[in-house]
Length: 344
Image 1 (cartoon, rainbow, N blue to C red):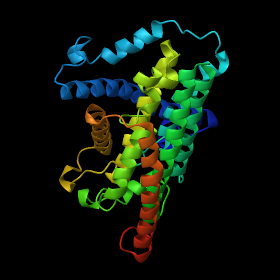
Image 2 (tube, rainbow, N blue to C red):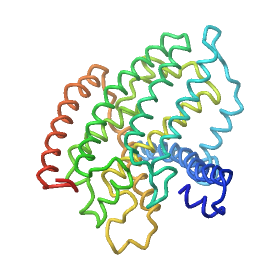
Image 3 (tube, helix red, strand yellow):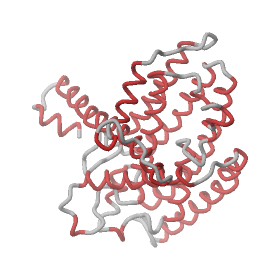
Image 4 (cartoon, rainbow, N blue to C red):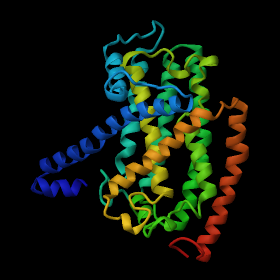
């Protein structure tokens, strides 16, 4: 994408290349921020529909501007910093969370050749960035100088580290059959319609990945770091104004990121389900699949009760870890024998 914009700008000099990089970043980041605002809206609408109520319906037509009104309200509020807090770390923590949530999208391909950076190690890049996400939460809990915030941060760190292991092993299952760490290459191996998508041969590991993604993003039924009845919102309890908004935006950007990763790994990315629909642009199919995954996230929050913390840890370490390890061995054997995948 950067190279295409560089050519469009004239293709001469480092300044134009820098402009091409900035243009590609804005082309991804601005739609992403708008998508996050509407994701919050649709999240609330889905919960409301399940509970047979209206949800946001006052600000703008059908309540479509509710998220923007909430953002304006947060922007206009005063940022209150607790007297005993470490002010520098207190303010840096939400910036880290929000920044990491945005830069993760650099390697996500929305169509063939449409990505900020088409890295050959795109999957490793995503794993590295998601691992760094723990630091923003730990810093916010510690810097708040509050027992509730610190307990919430510890919970969240333990939870995210636990389920990153399962996500990593699921990715290994895909990688050993595809033979590439490039996310665009993973999508290209699923060309040929819905029967070529990875969801069918990899259905068991998709279930593990989806549940682990819920835990990784602190979504119900694994929202233990923010359990209001126990920790009054957990690690972000002392935050207000735009500092709180950065955590909120980062959380939803990560949910959309996980939805995009599942669309790429298991649902054919930008490819249409049948050849007759190939006339529809690939980025539209990508957005539709992200929306489907997000709908699944929202529905789980609507009807699944919250886990206890010991159940959460047991599921991650005693169930998903051995299961994902077993599937790595199984899919590696199938790939080497040539039953599935592009290597053998």
